Length: 179
Image 1: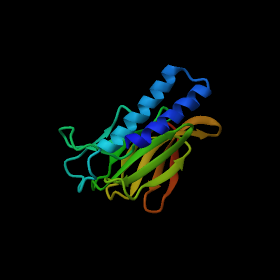
Image 2 (image 1 turned 45 degrees about the vertical axis):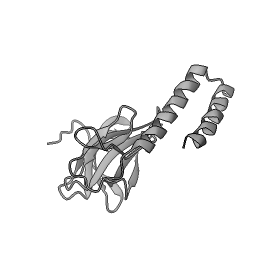
Image 3 (image 1 turned 90 degrees about the vertical axis):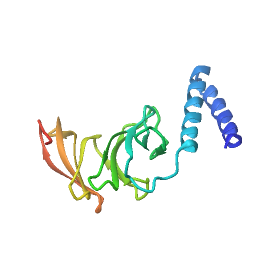
């Protein structure tokens, strides 16, 4: 892996310097790429079961499943950056699926996958979801988000059907409370 990574880092350094980036910015970017590559290569095997796993939002913006003692780290995502963050990870009640929000530059998404990273779904949404809450049957997600109502900032309660891949707005206004 190191032999393939060195030419990529060299090319990245040349491009960043050519674009006017400082040497410190080049080192920082290269360090981030190396760290993400190391996370991906050091990750534990795909877990057989979600049992005894903790869902963690890492300091680097990626999502991980880990054993309670911090070992057996499995990366659900490996591509977080200063413009891409994964937030609000939430287990489904049946323990088989995970939902999270992704902020990608100016775009927002609601994503789900099985605990092993398979069967990933992605829904582009107008505003970043927060307070993501699974239905008891683990097939729908309710969430709050900022919203625009009559050209005024507001909030919305939305429902995402994971099976159908569609979302609808249930209510607009403020305040909203979950219990």
